[in-house]
Length: 557
Image 1: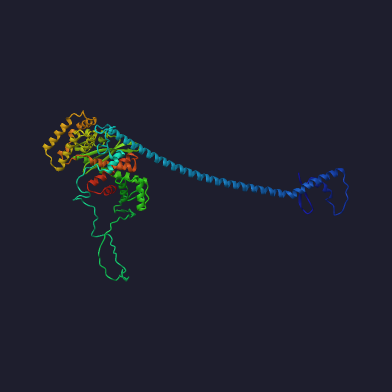
Image 2: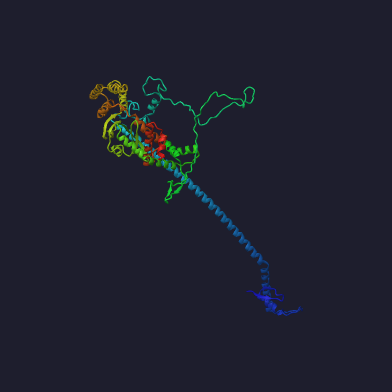
C-alpha cells in the first residue's frame, strides 16, 4: 500500500503513492520558482494526494499515541489478571484451610461417636449383667422376686447384692446398721496392731533449727552455744525422675571370640519402677488408662499415652504367665478352696469372672460361659483333694472334689426373709437357730461327734416337716436345702473349712469396682491380663507381701 521515497538528505519516510507521483516532476528543481497549470486529471490526483497526505499526517501524529494507549491497556489487563490470580490463590488457600478445619472437626466428631459407641456398649453389657442377675435371682429356688403383699428382698434377707437393692432398702442400710450389736466398744480392739508412725534411729536428712535473735533485746545469738530440746521426724514422699543410660560393650578374647552383652533393641524405654507403678494403679487401684497417664504426667512430668499404658499391662501380663500357672497348680492340691463367679462386660458381650481361692492363693479367670465348660477349661481334673466352699450354683456340684460346704451366710439371709414373710410361724426361726448354734460351736471350739450328730438329726427332722400350710416360699426354700443337706455341717468336721464364702465374694468384688470405675473390658485379652495380674497381687498380699513389690518382681523378670 505504501512505497518508500528517498530525499536528498537521506531521510526516509513512508508516503502515499499519489504524493510520490505528484512530486516526481520536481526532483530536479534547483530552488527556482515555477507556476503550474493543472489539468482536470491532475486536479483529481491532487485531491487524492491531499486526502492521502492528511491520512498520512494523522498516522504520523496519532499512531504512536494509539500504540502507547494499546500497550497501556495491555498492562492494565495484565495487572488485573495478576490481581485476580492472587485473589484466586488466596481464595484457594482459605478454602484449603477451611477444608483442613472441617476435617479436624470431622475427626473429632468421629472420636466422640466412637466414645459414645463404647459407652453404649458398656451400658448394654452392664444391662445384660443386671438382666442375667435378675434372671438368676428369679429362677433360684430360694430367692424369687418379691410379689405384691410380700416383704421386699434386699441384701439382708436374700442373695441380692447391695448394688441392686431398691432405693428404700439402700437408704435403710445407710441409716441403720444391719449387723447385730457385738457389745464391743468402737474402734480398735485390744491386741490390734496399730498404724502409728514410728521414729527411726538414723534419718536420711537432719535439719537444725536454732534461734538467731533474742526475743527480748534483739541481740544476735549466733556465737552462743545451743542445747537440743526436742526433735521431730518428718516422713515424706519425694518423686524423683531418674534417667539411666546403659552402655553395652564387647570384648575380643585371645582365641578370637567376640563377647558382648545382650542389649535391648530400643533407643529409649520406661524403667521397671514406672512400669510397675502403671500396672499397680490399674490392677490394684482400678484406675483407668487416661487417669493413669494424667497422674504420671502430674507427678513426674513424663508424658505417657494411654496406648503405652495398655502395652505395659500386656507386656507385664506375659511375664506373669509362669506365676499365674503356679497359683493354679497349687490350688489343685489345696485342702480347702472357695469359689464364686460374677458377670463382667467384655466389649458388647456378657462374660463371667470366676475366682478360686483360699487363705494363701487367689486365682481369677474370665470366660464366656457360666457353666461347667468354664471350670473344666482351668481345672479339667477338678479339685480332688479339696473341700469346695461355694453358694448353691449347680456347676460347682458337678466338679470332682473331696467334699462341699455351702455358704451358711446365704442361707441365714434367705431364712430371714421367711421370718419377715410370716411372723406367726417358727419354722424359719428354728432353722436359723440350728445354723447359728452350729456356728457358735465352731467359734467356741466346742465340737464333738455327738453334737454334730444331734445337729444333723434336728436338721433332718426340720426338713421333713410339711410346709404346705405356709407360703410357697417356704416350700421352695426347703427344696433348695434338701439338695445340699449333706453339705451344711462339713465345716464342723474340718477346722480349716469356713462356714461362709465371704472371702470369695470379696475377691470378685474387685471386678465390680473395676467395671464401675473403668466401664467394660474392651477385649478378651484385656480382661485376661487384669485377671492374671490381679491374681498375683492378691496372692502376694495373702502371703504378707506388698502388692506393688509383687508386681515389680513380675516386671523385673
